[in-house]
Length: 83
Image (cartoon, rainbow, N blue to C red; front, top):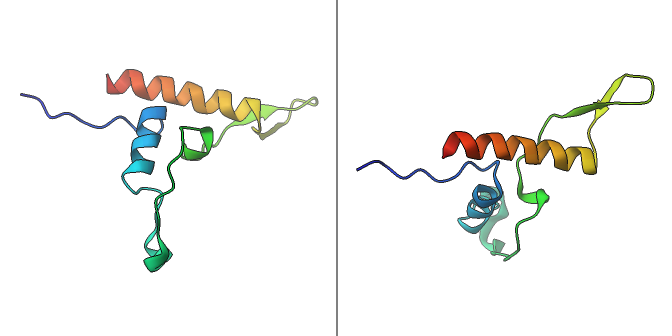
């Protein structure tokens, strides 16, 4: 008897669901909007503000592997809360 909520967009399934249901389209796209099928990838995830220390200990924006690790950690936490 409970309402079924979709998975958070910060998870792989939620990001793909948002893409499939038109979340990737904006109103500015006009009549030329078209659906482009794709597999799930990190580009579908909402941006994340993650930082990693550099060699001198100062924080810099996470890129590459560090960014994907931060996105994955956020997705795991969000899917645990969703379940």
